[in-house]
Length: 322
Image (cartoon, rainbow, N blue to C red; front, side, top):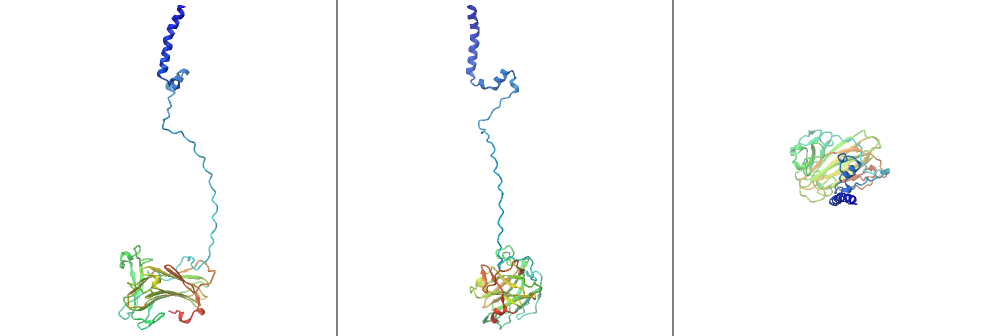
């Protein structure tokens, strides 16, 4: 009996020590090092793996959506019209006035006008009636010359607020300081394919110098063939002041393949008027029209488009000749 109590007395301190140790370390049963010792593997071989509290649980990558197969775009329907884009190739000679000029003999007032190469420059003489205005008599010979880029202020050079040059480094100016006048440029183009259709485009800018009369000045462009005539006048009230206005003159080429191109400007009062011209073009139209031309011009903002009329359908007073 004494041996039993002696054995219990020896074991009781050891049991109490284990209970105390567990109470001091409540996570001891979750320590991977305790498991390692129990299996006989040294704890140094199995490091503790800690997951930071702020690390979110990783989510599986979403399954990529299947790639959509694009549907073929419908083919657009192209309707040929009188305003179809022209094909490349300008048939006008010296349309941007970059190819030099010749000086004409002195006009009254000792004016030396510059005739652009490829063009014929003419004007109405003093005392003649103004074109399409029999009540006005010409009182002055206009000046016509080339304005080079270095002769223009910065705001009138390319990139400025009011550029007077649309192509290259030169623009062409026809003007008078204060008298009624009329001036024109003329050019003949040959060897055009018979039956083809073309557009003659003339960008033109008027300076009215404060004259608010919408009919004080006018500009016009024409294409003349042996079978038809196209073109007409536009008053400055439609053109605007100090802005580019575009004359689009469309025509059909007859069997002789020849067309006469005509640009005219006129002013009817004793006030200064300036006209600038640049980047004149003659280009073949890419599409064939489906309907005949209308006699009325098509005005659209800063441009007008004219269609040809058969010579037999035009009153004699409306026929134009150089």
